[in-house]
Image (tube, rainbow, N blue to C red; front, side):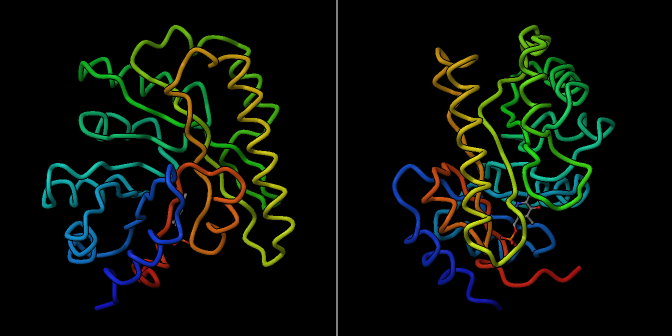
Length: 223
Ligand SMILES: *Cc1c(COP(=O)(O)O)cnc(C)c1O
């Protein structure tokens, strides 16, 4: 098997204090997750509801699962009982559904708002303007069972380090802006989830608090 333990320790050695690792285990088997778990890793990220459900049923109960993929509203009910954080919220509709399902489970679910800053075409993520509008609109304030803990984004998948860096800076500036406008009295609004296998070193230099790393730890995914 891939040297999961060795790779995990190398990644952890690269992370400054205050930056947490979400080990992205999608498409990887349980034995890989168990290897990382044995080394003390507790936060794992998955992007498909069914795959996550199977893993949750068979893996240790103290794993903190982050949902990092695009989440359809009709799938929220399945993960609401146990999910630790939903990282990629990009609409008020989804936020409301999470709130509803969290209420049914008598809990509060932590979420991040997903930004779309990269140049690549994707239908997911809020533009900076859409993020500002969602927060200015204020409907989110009525939602008692979701807690917005920060922002998440993916930089463009390019080799140009300057471009990646500038996208992280745009995200950090937006974080600072909305923090001061809406969350100044909320210490829980503190997460900046950026940085993946190919760009996490740049991301931590640009203020990431949470990196999402799969390939560097677990090897290439077999789809
Ligand atoms: C798959 C995925 C990652 C991890 O990507 P790697 O390049 O394997 O590190 C991080 N974030 C999101 C949203 C993902 O879908």
